[in-house]
Image 1 (cartoon, rainbow, N blue to C red):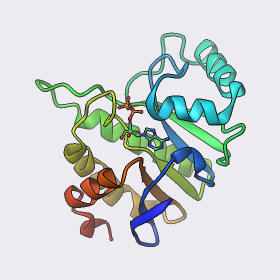
Image 2 (image 1 turned 90 degrees about the vertical axis):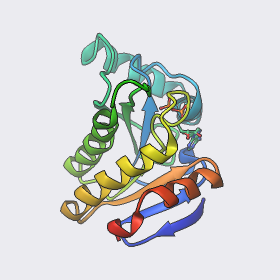
Image 3 (image 1 turned 180 degrees about the vertical axis):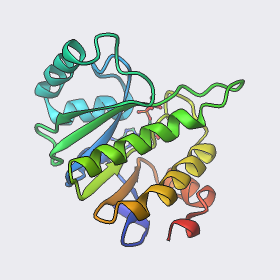
Length: 182
Ligand code: ADP
C-alpha cells in the first residue's frame, strides 16, 4: 500500500484494503450483509466462504431486517490478514437530502466498536463513494470531521484510510482540510 500522507494517528494510503494486516478492516456492506460488489465483494472473496456464513448468522440472530444504514456489526476476518471485519452500511447519496450524518455515523460507530474491543490498528475504505454515489469531496470533509473529533479521545487507535486509486487518495487530501487532523 502506498502512503500518501500520515501522522502518528492517521494514514491516507492507496491500495487494496483486503491486504491490510491490522486488528480490523471496515466493510462498506449492504443491508443484507450477504455480500455485494466493490469493496464488499473483494472482502468476501479474500475472507473466504466462512465470512458469508458468519454474516448469514448475524442476519438471523441480530439483524433479521438487515443492518440499518449507519450501524455496525462485527465478524472475524477468517482468511483475511486482518483479525476482524466491522461491517457498516453507508447511505446512498441523494441530491435532495442531506445524509452526511448517516455517513458520519458509519465512521463514528466503527471507531467506537474498535475502541470497545481495544483494537489498535483499523482501516476504512471510502464508504458510500462507489456504487452508493456519495461525492468523494463531500465524503472527505465528513470523514475528516469525524477523525478530528474522535481520534484525540481514542489515543491507542491508529486509523488508515485506504483508497483504491491514487486519484481518490489525492482527492481526499485536497478536500479533507487534513491540517486540522494533525
Ligand atoms: P459503496 O456501495 O459504499 O459505495 P463500493 O464498494 O461501491 O461501496 O465503493 C466504496 C469505495 O471502495 C470506492 O471508492 C471503491 O473504489 C473502493 N474499493 C473498491 N474495492 C476496494 C478494495 N479492494 N480496497 C479498497 N477500496 C476499494
